[in-house]
Image (tube, rainbow, N blue to C red; front, side, top):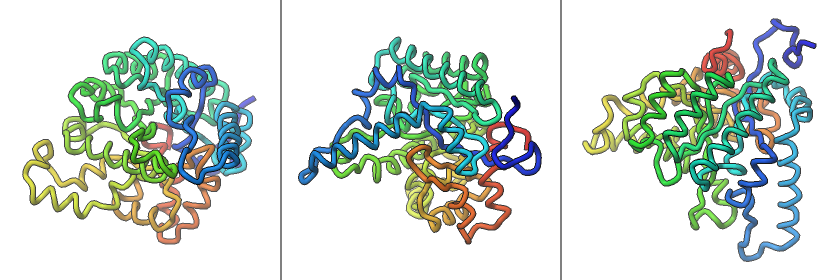
Length: 342
């Protein structure tokens, strides 16, 4: 039976595309969970066992939703989402802890799962793979397999690769291959494990936005965007703090020569080479993001299954954004980035 977009008739309107939707592969999670930040329970003073039980209960619900495709399609229909772009949740099953061959094996298992999920719902799901980016040669090989063999549209990566920043020279072959393949790269942090972010779930509330800003900074300052202008990169959570503090960044560019050794144009020009999802939880912030980078650089993001449960309404109810701009965010931009008919 041929699927049609939720609420559509196969051409009555452009499909709504959610770019920020996580999956979890149970067999991979069983191995990786103990090494990833999501499995850590809070130990802050004042936290009770009852609170920890509630966290465990919610975690179980989230884990189930990420691997249940039938429930996913039903939730998409309820949310008014026609297509989800699937990525592995790196806070649950990131691979940076593993040795080269273990991380490659788990990445391949994940990517096969994603490819099978897409094959089971080809009109509703699009896949981005995962990689052992901390082992750059293996990352390049698996990227090619994802795109050429599995027909995934690209890959999702974290904001760092083990101890390497994304602009590190060791990762340069990955960026070159991604540009060559026209692969979409979705940057979503796996969680900052620094002790400063341990308390009060700061790794999630503050740390993710910090990591996204650092990732953009590395791509910009270390010359990745200068060397590879055709890269297709989208950053989660509206790019973290980066788009909202460009004044100081611009000032440094003009005042401090060492900040621009790998740059030939102002930081804002590099920022506008990237895409950003709309998962920012505040309509004023979304309006500022659109004003800063342009409506054509923003895509819909829900952070399924834990984030914005009414992502379409979130965009539609942002009064500062015009109807035409909302249409771009909900559909057109993601279709363009993914190379879909538009």
